[in-house]
Length: 155
Image (cartoon, rainbow, N blue to C red; front, side):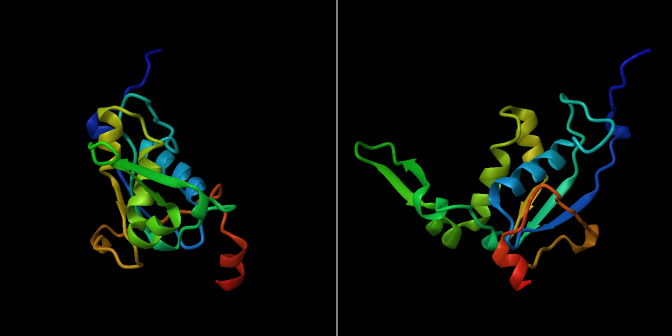
């Protein structure tokens, strides 16, 4: 018996939409990265991109557990001496929430050209609106990504 290797003609890509309102960032990222890789399909192959497209809306309403929003820092360096800048995740969620979600998901993808190709299928938007209505995305249920208690009682 030969090992099945999917050809480009065998791959069918679906579009999924995820509402990140009240979801924990890390749990959301692991589930979305799994769908982008195609691990939910029976024809999953680690060396082939067979994953689906994922649209994440309401990225500005994602939450971090514990006190990570205030204590966890994101660092960047200008390249000059003394050019290290530190920003807390609470400020990043206000200013660039879509980048926070995108970086969390791409950090869980392979670190090679295949991972970069998978990351192009991720679309992240701060609000509830997105320009992909023509693709008729289906809602994606994320059983592993739990909603916070405040989101459960408020929604």
